[in-house]
Amino acid sequence: MRNEADAAEPPDPVDARLAARLAELRSERGWSLGELAERSGISRSTLSRAERAEISPTASLLNRLCQVYGRTMSRLLSEVEAEPAPLVRAGEQSVWADRASGFVRRSVSPPHPALRAELVEGRLAVGADLAYDRPPVAGLEQHIWVLEGALAVTAQDTEHHLDAGDCLRLRVWGPTRFRCAGDAEARYALAVVLP
Image (tube, rainbow, N blue to C red):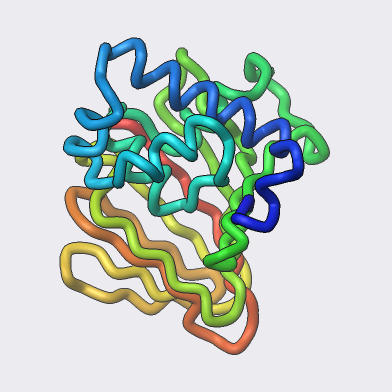
């Protein structure tokens, strides 16, 4: 993740492509930064800096933009990668990190235009706590399978505590929260299915 101290360094190539794609999405809709700020609840200055790759957006910020643009985070991230192949080798799976929150996201089975589902591996460091104010796509179906550690997931004002092997299935309509609920990293598989 880029911060003020990193501003003099060139952006990470993925961050640079992501910034360009964010600017392109806004341009495709003919929106000004002000209009996007109103729709997303993100300040104009933050949006401008993200589109110029001066900062690396957080998971929460990307989630809000995905909601405005009607796509999942995986779909947005896949749009800055090469065309998806039917077989995705472990070494070719894109990894994105929100270092500020302790969240690492691996796109195990990235989105494909002909498919409605994708598979993500999530890792939350001890103490990590991610809150999303809305889903990227209303009614998004999620299956959260904990592989290691403990995870607390809050959806529709109900917190679910999941241990290794547990699976939570839900449709996401409102705010959600993912929190590492143990004294070790939480690693989980997330199946995401578009409505």
